[in-house]
Amino acid sequence: MDFKGYSFQHQGEKRDHLTFGNDFLPELERVVAAHSPNGSKYLEWGAGLSTLLLTDLASRCFGTVVSVEHNTEYADSVLSHVRHPATLQLFAVDLNGPRLSQSDTGLNYGTLPLSLGIDFDFILIDGRRRLECAYSAFVLASPPRL
Image (cartoon, rainbow, N blue to C red; front, top):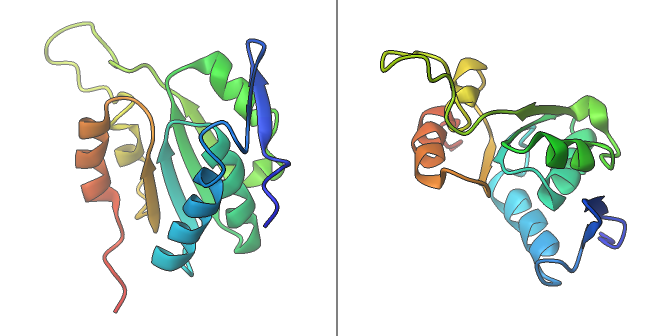
């Protein structure tokens, strides 16, 4: 796959296929293919170049990508470069969630996907609150296929 078309700008800063090294996107594609070859439901915390790749992969199998991002403007920058927007559910969510009282039950950045009722085939944690996201990912992951 040619990754040169994977790029977007946010606040004048360009992110492209080489931003995180020339092996980031090829390695992500390899890991998805190896561990979720028939997957169609992808979850990621932290939108960006991975979102562009995952939505392309999802479009091949009539799949969906749920992306959770904490920065609304950044999420909009990414969304404007997604080639297959119908495959993407992008949520811009506050890192802390509701803060009205100690007993708030509202969902936040790390827990929002728990409300969707989806067992995901592939989960990427590449954003904030990684430990909290890992706890949620454990609950959300599809059981391994034998």
